[in-house]
Length: 426
Image (tube, rainbow, N blue to C red; front, side, top):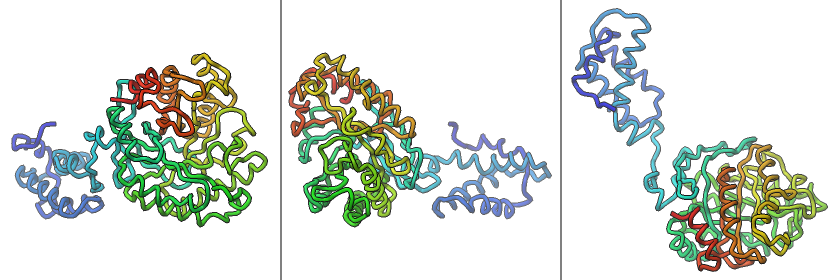
């Protein structure tokens, strides 16, 4: 853009809209009356505009309303456009910008401003793009498709040093960390220890919280008997990183199986009401919380959709993908991938269900290698492409050998490790 100088004075000679400098000053004052910028900055802009008015000596003659509009644009709007500070050092909402700007994505991978906008980098093999995640109204919503990027994260267990080891191996900072909270008791449900554990981690944390711990039951939770426990955890998480605009919560996952205390078979109504109690309790503390609903893949103890709590209580819809040959009885990786796609309540179903409810898809955790699945680079390639196609909100690779032996960074599965770094590394 050409900067303003005296040779541009002819732009101000188009019309004469005011009788004298006093009238022009009044016009400036009324124009800036509703601008949401600080007073000193407004005064500097008004002074600059007034100087331009005097310098160019706008001719005194009567004009039509159309010419008045042209003159206002020339004498007021253009000086604002020419002002470098307005658009590059301070915006009209006087936003306090963070040190981790877009140009510093490689070190921080995340920028959040006071308006609730997040700037992130989406990853595809050897191709990255940056875009802004607009803030979402955190109250009850029917469409939470509020981002065009993916948070690429990892689970490493409860050792922050392993995040550093993973990042060193991957060759870049991770954008997300999956953190689990204990479910052995309500004391274990307390997140204070976890906040302390991850306090030095700059990545976005996706919190996995039990819907209820062992010893509790869905009958009592559905009545709201545990809401004070929920609110305490919500307060701790809201104060953990008070400057963040979104706090991601996944709870009650795998409800259609038999493993967890909150299994829903035979008590779907209690599960749904417990979910609502949980969400309402967290939202009563802060509107920042966003909730993921995540059934197990496949037909297990019940159809997953029977436990969907409703669009106003869900922000994203997820599915875990752990490569397993022993349970599927399919040894060929290509056939196994097609099975994950097409099986009842598989990936095709979760894609369709999320689209039907206008929700973002998540793959909250996934892995390869264990359960006789082997060094499966094919799943990494296919699932990565599927996630890019479906614009998932976040994904976390299980880089751990706890419960599922999926660790890649120690060359346990060399082919899969190479393919993973191709898609998610530098």
